[in-house]
Length: 319
Ligand code: NAD
Ligand code: UDP
Image (cartoon, rainbow, N blue to C red):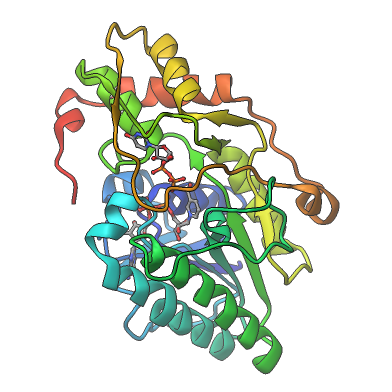
C-alpha cells in the first residue's frame, strides 16, 4: 500500500485530497496545526484504518515513521484575511515548512507535490496567465507575505529537484471553491454566501470590475492527482478559465440564494489583482486535464452544503 503525507489536511483543499487518496487505496497520513483548518473537515476519516492524523506545525522538523511514497504540501493560510493576520507564520510555512517537506522527501525517496498559487503572478500584466509569465508581485505590500512565500517555495522546490534529484511537482492553483471552505475565511465565495444566509448585504470590494476565474474543488483535485502521477516537474496551472467580474459574481450569488439583500461597496484591498484567468494549455497537454464542472453546478452544490450547516456555524468567529 502506497503511503502519502498530506500537509494542511484539515483545511479546505487538504481534506478533499485526503478523501481522494483514501478512495484511490492509499494510506493517508494527515498533518495539520489547525491554524486555519478544522478537524470537522476530516472527522469522517478518523475511524478509517488507512488514515491517521498528526497535529504538527510543519515549520518545525517533521518526523514520519516508516515508508513514505508521496508528499502533498498544502499547509499554508490561503485567504487574504488569514495571511494578513499571521504574516510571519505564512512566510515560515512557505519557506521553512516547504524546506522540511523537501528534506523529508529526500530522506524517504518520496515524490513531493507543492501547492503554489496564481498569486505568484501577482497583479498580472499578462492575460490570461501562462506558466512562462514571471509575474508582477509587490514584495513589500501586504500580500507580499503570501506571494513571496509561495515564490520562495517554488524556487526551493526546483533547487531540490535540480541539486538533490528529488522528484518534485508544482501546481499553481487558481481560485478554487466548494464545500468545507470556512464561512468566515474572508474569501469572496464564503463571504457572499455567508452574508446571504445571515441576511446581510453583500460586500463588493472596489467597483467590482476586478475578475477571477473560479474552479470547483473536484476538478482541481483531479488535476492535482494527475500532476502527481505525471512526469512534469515544472509548474502547471490548474484552474477554470471561465472568468467573471466580482460584481457579476455577487449578482449570481444573489440569484442563487434568493436573498433580498443588496450589494454594498467597500474599499479595494491593497494590491488586489485586477484580473486573473488561467491559461490551461499546458495542463491539457501534459495531464489531459480540463475542468468539467460549470460554475452553475459547482455553486449549487456549494450553496447546498453551506445552507445545511447548523445555524450557529454561520456566526463562528474567525480563527
Ligand atoms: P485552508 O486554510 O483551508 O487550509 C490550509 C491548511 O493548512 C489549514 O488546515 C491550516 O491549519 C494548515 N496549516 C497552515 N499552516 C500550517 C503549518 N505551519 N503546519 C501545519 N499545518 C498548517 O486553505 P486551502 O484553500 O485549503 O489552501 C490549501 C493550500 O492550497 C495552501 O497552500 C494554499 O496556498 C493553496 N492554494 C489554495 C487556493 C484556493 O483557491 N483554495 C488557491 C491557490 C493556492
Ligand atoms: N472580494 C469582495 N468581497 C469580499 C471578499 C472578496 O469583493 O467580501 C473580492 C476581493 O477584493 C478580490 C476577489 O473578491 O478582488 C477575490 O477575493 P478572494 O479573497 O476570494 O481571493 P483572491 O483575492 O486571493 O483571489
